[in-house]
Image (cartoon, rainbow, N blue to C red; front, top):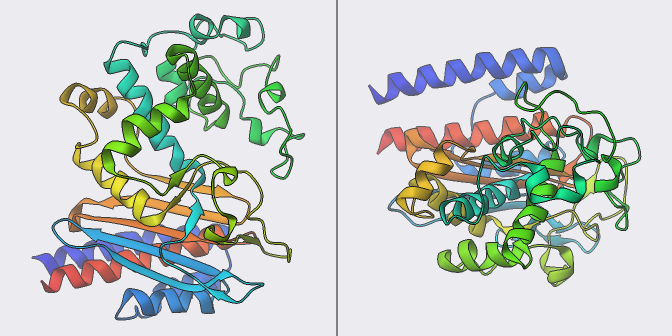
Length: 342
């Protein structure tokens, strides 16, 4: 029965993936996806490097078993330092899981209300963001606010550290009326950080450290490149550019192990009290991907094999989003085949 289920999952995944590849990417990706799987995760990682990725880190942890660490390629291409599975990495939008968890805890504790509006929490923005008096905190967490995404603005630049990104979306028309649609917007989470800080009277990152990281014993998760030793951070590259992009300040940073431990606690509920689990279940997702210049990441829990799988890739540009997705799917299939044999 296990083998039959595995075959069904494999075929279904193949249909979806190959269809996407046919529409969006070169045919060689379809051929690669359908090519025979290696026997081990490390062999698949070595293949990923052969496909042109500068560096890759993978963390896998099955419930009741110790974590597995894998790496391939370069930690620093210029210095020819091999990839380190315990290196720091820019986790980009995976950080939204931490932010949503913080909101959950503050709501459970009565410091915030999911029905409170943007105008309630940040009254100075009432005349600067359309529908501020109708946009609730819940809508912001769930990307249903209609607030434009600052990273989509023509004046936004990943390489400009001094840019006031909030100013890019002030006084713009909403993408849609609050709650009427869904549109992924980094502006929501920028504003959520401001709301959290206002409610607490101190920085929201300190709250995340105290209430999420510390209880889980996570000491290798940071807010910014300014908080770490740059040598500990995996280099990031964009195809067509020789420069190392690690110096750009692009959000949260962590090891794959720290992300994996957090994701396990998020999915098994041990991160929360009973009340908090109920709130989070109605609020946000339990997995995420991330992308910034030079860095792409995936953090998922696979219930069928009770395994947390984290993948970090230090190359972006061209068709790498599709390629890294294929590599991730192939690693999942290797783990499923191993699981079916046990």
